[in-house]
Length: 92
Image (cartoon, rainbow, N blue to C red):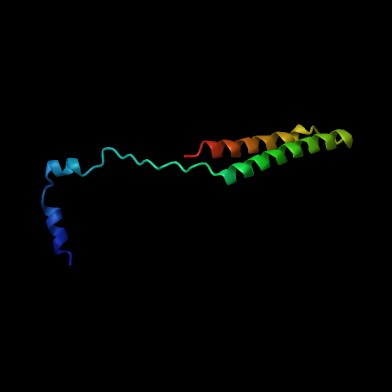
């Protein structure tokens, strides 16, 4: 069973074979997916909801005199919405 392996152990490799055995360069180009109209509509609706939530939070914090700044809620929402949109537009 192991007889064929013994011949590889005993013989010296040919230098030309060794040079050709390694991959020098590899380029894989994936075709970019076309923009999805459905995903862009979902993103647009999401942005409308984020903006509506921001106005609602700002209004509620001013009206009911809560003990914190409304930007503690609005800021992270805008940051993550921006991050999600950026990831979609920069995808490969």
